[in-house]
Image 1 (tube, helix red, strand yellow):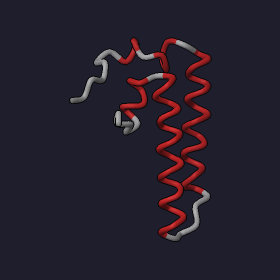
Image 2: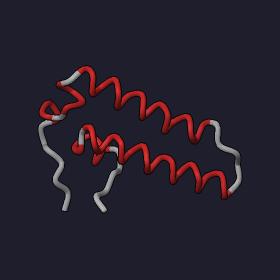
Image 3: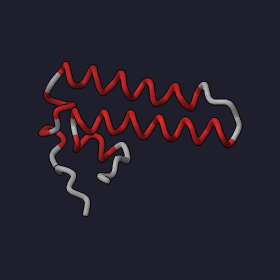
Image 4: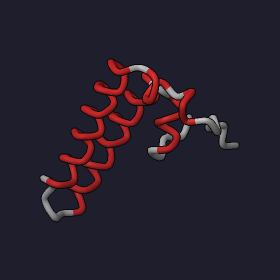
Length: 74
């Protein structure tokens, strides 16, 4: 069941500048994983694994924003 808060202004990403900066840096790192990824299956799988770790870090900061990024609670 998706429990994303319908009002994005309640998310920490939009209301706390320090948390926004941390999340933005993690998103940048995630984007760089694929921008600099070798075109092999192994490299892409490793990038996906690292991306999942970064999204888990985002979830620790703002769960609602992470859910919008594709994070799923285990």
